[in-house]
Amino acid sequence: MKNAIDFVESALETLDRRPKNAIVEFYTAIELFLKARLMAEHWSLIIGKPETASLHAFSLGDFQSVYLDDSAKRLKDIVGEPLDEKALINFRGLGEHRNQIVHFAHSDYPNAPGARAGVVVELWASWHYLHQLLAQTWKQTFSAYQGEITRLHGQMMRQADFIQVRFQELGPQIDELTKLGSTFVRCNHCRTAAGKVEAAHKWGSDFRCLVCDSTGLAVKPTDATVPCDVCGTALRFLDKDLVACPTCGQALDTDKRISLCQAAYKEGDDWWEEGAPHIAECHVCRYHRPSVFYVDGLWSCVSCFDRGWQAVTCPHCGEFVTGDMEAIKYACCFKCE
Image 1 (spheres, rainbow, N blue to C red):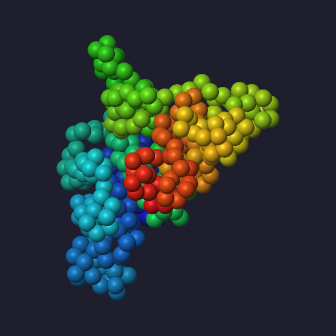
Image 2: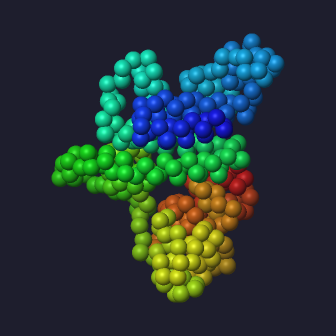
């Protein structure tokens, strides 16, 4: 894990001077993260031929390790955690680019001012899937590294200048699609207004971003506010960019948002009964406290800002949670899974 994290940091540091090298280093990090997950299951799983495994040779680093496809197969067949097919396709594509860079002249990445922007977009697409694995799917396995993963995510987010270059390059295409009837929303990942809406729901819009090629949900916005408990300023609390009160400067972390909403939102939806819990636990971010309130017609988490899921008391463990109602009814909720 430490080696993989070092390679991600090196890729980000290399972007300005040698953008092609950044792809080599970032792809190396991907393979190392997958091997780390296999090793968490059993050390022999990262060896190319497990039947030849020797603990002594392993401890000396004297072995041939698995590559991407074998890692993916073992994650699926042995660990029981298959990679999302889109993620695997993305990782393979980055691996092909890595091989072209290492072994051949790679004409797709010329030494030009625009090269870094193009590479950033490519790394962003891979980081989208990688971050989902590290911070969500494998969060418990790599709990000791969540701080470093969050830090890396922040570093990736700061590539904004180069994402904007890509956004500007796509401007004419976005304008043309808009004239033809397409709708665009702000992408959750690269933060540009390049998210092409593919499906609309009452809770928001599914989109695919033309800039970073990520998919996501643009949740339905709300103008709902709560008053700051220090100065009384109306705060649009369902805004991840609002980290402090603009008037008095009071920090607005998740616990403070929960505290402010507890005073303002005391009821649930039409299915809610008087006296029953009205603050649900979020199955998306799994914050350690109930963080989901019924705001402006939708159950809304003030920790991860996801909206639109239903909330129910789990019939198996009795916890008030969000999630897929059918799965909770017939199987379990995230608290009792």
